[in-house]
Image (cartoon, rainbow, N blue to C red; front, side):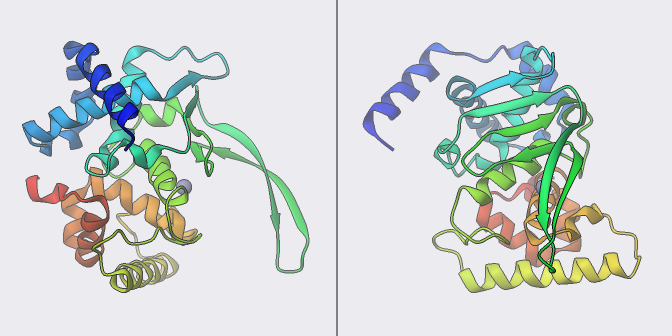
Length: 251
Ligand SMILES: [Zn+2]
């Protein structure tokens, strides 16, 4: 991290404070934060202050973002990078929030080379190097196992870091082959479960694509850590190394 940036961040942390009453209000709705130690909570708050200072968040389609909404989104965006640092989010600045699901036009080329143009309703979207787009209605209905903010920011961590279209690369110090094989095996097992019609605790949407699997499993890692550690222990262990956190330990 450059000297100037470090200096600016220290100055921001000295001069800005989170509104404690508002923090309590936001944290009360994010039950998965309860497992954090006091020290981790303090570091998360500092990260949130810096996130709010360095990123831009805008409401779209007439949505007026309240301070509570900003704080809630920033907090959920910062949880996955608590031990990775804000520099992971370096390549972009914007978060755009729509009141509800938003319609996007997509183009897909099928195996026969035919281009299909269609519209899709989305709860969130992330662009490489670009903004994160969220539906406030979906952010607000965050519950254990479903968290659109963590989902989209997991995509950001994946697409703006090293790796391929399927999965992010292992971090330094990780066994890269083990990381990859664990993700691939878990994805195959999950798709087989979905194909067999077996009810899955994890959202079946995760079977759409390996990158979606990573994002959905990241949601579960942070918001249903004990269940993930129980049902998918190898995957949980690898995600713990990737995110440098062990949320199930404190549940
Ligand atoms: Zn996704």
